[in-house]
Amino acid sequence: MLEVNFTGGAVAFLLGHLAAISLYVKFRRERPASSQKAAAVTTLLAVPLVSYQLTGKTDVALYALSLSGMAAAAWLSSFPRYRVGLGAMMFVTSDLLIFARMGPLAKSALPDLLIWPLYYFGQFLICTGVIASLRAKGEFSPRPGA
Image 1 (cartoon, one colour):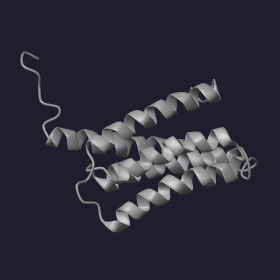
Image 2 (cartoon, one colour; image 1 turned 120 degrees about the vertical axis):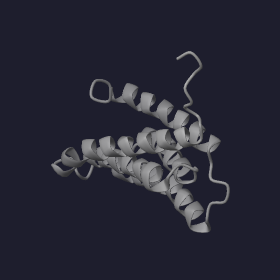
Image 3 (spheres, rainbow, N blue to C red; image 1 turned 30 degrees about the horizontal axis):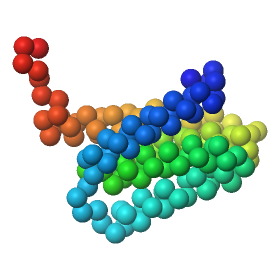
């Protein structure tokens, strides 16, 4: 969607981030360590700020707030941090490279080389981490008669 209509794609991703935040909050970690809370708050605040600095665009920073909220919520969730949390941070990095491509790295090949692998493997870690964890909690039990 981003390749066809950037604004439409951003709205679709924003809605996806809100859905992910809802899932992560539903399965939040009971007692996160102070360092985990600090990492989440830093992510929540830094990603929109860096996004604005890379692009100078308020709408990008507002989108980045949903992105950072998703990553912070993933980090504080009860899902495996080194799968779901790391995957969310890879997703953030992929988007920051998209924003950098709009500004300081416009002529660099680096974003084009890294955006899709970071996004793909980030999503892979998120999906496999969430599904494995929910299966272990009995959330994907076979339906009777299925």
